Length: 192
Image 1 (cartoon, one colour):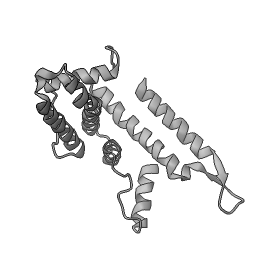
Image 2 (cartoon, rainbow, N blue to C red; image 1 turned 180 degrees about the vertical axis):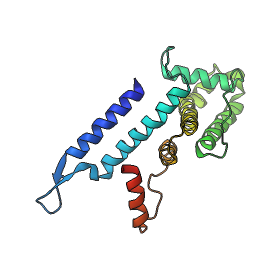
Image 3 (tube, rainbow, N blue to C red; image 1 turned 60 degrees about the vertical axis):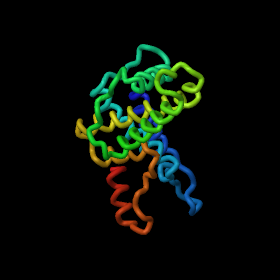
Image 4 (cartoon, helix red, strand yellow; image 1 turned 180 degrees about the horizontal axis):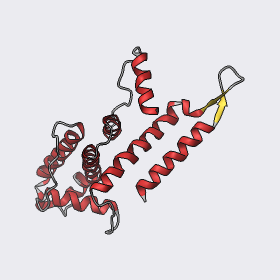
């Protein structure tokens, strides 16, 4: 239901933003609010996530039956750190999402070593130094796996790049402002 909600919500927001108008700077004509970047970014983000996560849902099971996601994140990371579980290796270790996952896992492993290793996984030190990173690590792993699934399913490279930028927190605008012709070309690809 989550992916469907993202897709439907994005469609509703898009239609609303196209139909809703404000008075243009000339004071007479109407201007749709979709022209504002504050409307465009959430719509693009929802559209990209809908595309990529749909591909991921077809690639891997997408239902959780065991309860709260935070508990599942803690359990998954604990088992990864304890060597009880191993994830499939990433398809491209040089990809930004894979590098982000590796950096976060390396940081958590270093913190685990500082507190005395996996044997201390039920201590207050583990609670303070490891648990806050569990959910961000699992989300990062999920983003990387979703990206790889979408890539394997043939999703457009432009959509993949947008998803990667949204997932890593990079700016969506990658071109200098003075390159107006290239920016207009990119806008046409994204909107049209």
